Length: 243
Ligand code: GEK
Image (tube, rainbow, N blue to C red):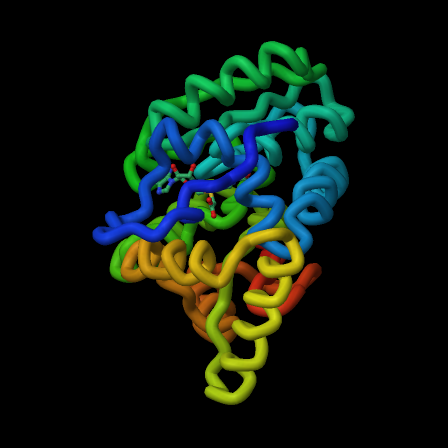
């Protein structure tokens, strides 16, 4: 997926508005996310691998907060059961419009159903794989338990949720070190200190990171029997939770 270069926070701004997934973000999204999230490309590819391993024939695979459908396309390319379907949900109209074009162009082997909805309001039917790839972090803290519980209840024994998140470390020294390394990663990808700091301001109270322990506790409390970190780089990780 190619896209324009992200220069949204490149110029000094007097007022920095709350970050939102609008048309401006959509036009630079693939560039923005791959230069901001360490290992994003690897995580997308491996979501395809995980889905191919765990999808059951005749079930739905949910991509919750799908953005432009990168994880959807990875699953649709690798899941071998032709009677599975990917249901990709996002509440940004701008994202879904572009996702539709990209999915039509890719013409994946599995059917893809796009839904413009809030993940908190949808019901999940006949699911075997659910993906929250950097979406839960944007929900208010008080709404997270209910969403994870709903996902757990929709899955059968042995089915999976893939949960990727930016995380916070309990230990202040480790948190500072991991944040500094993430900052260095962004610098290395061409973002200036000004861009990094203005983006951080825009994301304040929008992206609320939790610790690994908090995620594990929520997942286990919702009924996931196994919770494993399968990818981690600095303050970003991805978990596979087995029902
Ligand atoms: C990827 N998964 O490329 N309901 C539905 N969608 C939501 C909600 C909500 N309540 N809140 C936020 N979103 C993607 C990347 S981006 C992560 C996910 C990022 C959507 C929001 O519109 C956006 O498209 C997505 O969640 C988060 O694998 O930009 O860091």
